[in-house]
Length: 131
Image 1 (cartoon, helix red, strand yellow):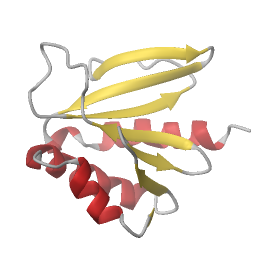
Image 2 (cartoon, rainbow, N blue to C red; image 1 turned 45 degrees about the vertical axis):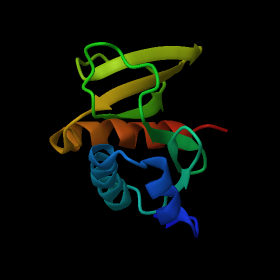
Image 3 (tube, rainbow, N blue to C red; image 1 turned 90 degrees about the vertical axis):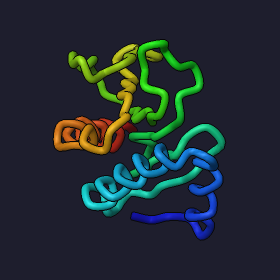
C-alpha cells in the first residue's frame, strides 16, 4: 500500500492519546494492506482515507457518538451502490441517489474480519467503477 512520507508521524498525531483506537486502526491497516496492495492511504484532519482511483473507505474517530456506542472505538466507513442490511452497520445514509455510505463501529480487533473485508472489497469495486 502506498503511504506518504510522513504517514507514521501523521497517524501517531491523529490517534494522539488514544492507544486503544490506534491499536484497532493498526489491525485494520494490516488487513487493508494485504487486501488492497495497490491502494493508497492518506491521513486527513478528520479521517484516514483509503483510495484506489477514488476514495473507497475511511477510518475515523466518532465525533457524534451515540449513547450505546463503546467508549473506545473507531468508525470504518465505505460506500456502496445499495444499502447493506446488517446489525453491524451502525449508520447508513444515501447522500446521492444510488450511493450509500455505511459506518461500522469497531471496538474489538476481532470485528475486523472477513465480513468487513468483503464489504470493503465491494466498496473498492464500486469506487473503481465510477467514471
